[in-house]
Image (tube, rainbow, N blue to C red; front, side, top):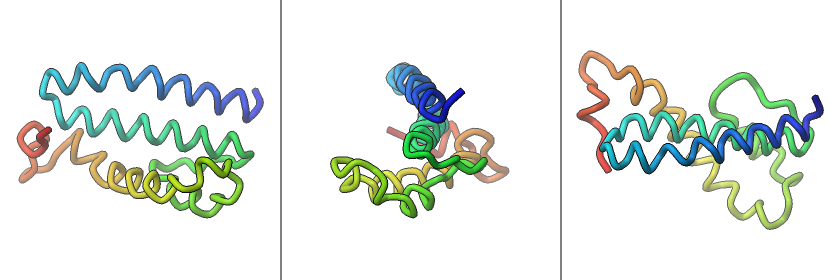
Length: 113
């Protein structure tokens, strides 16, 4: 499988997963929206890296790699990279809390629209 094919697979998977977010919002499952959004962003960014020939690392926030190789992305995408990097970092930070919570952090109570 080539990087381009795998990149396209990541984009397809992330686009299909986007369809679940409105359902979770309607159900007021806000912590699940966070978790699912994180996975969608992670897939999309790893697809972006693969598309420019970079093997993405095996961790959740690839924002630093997006920044490092920013000059390789199409010029139309470059102005949006800082925002994408910030979103990826925030979602990565919220990833575990939104799913598992903690003794003093109940995900279904902590997140809102």
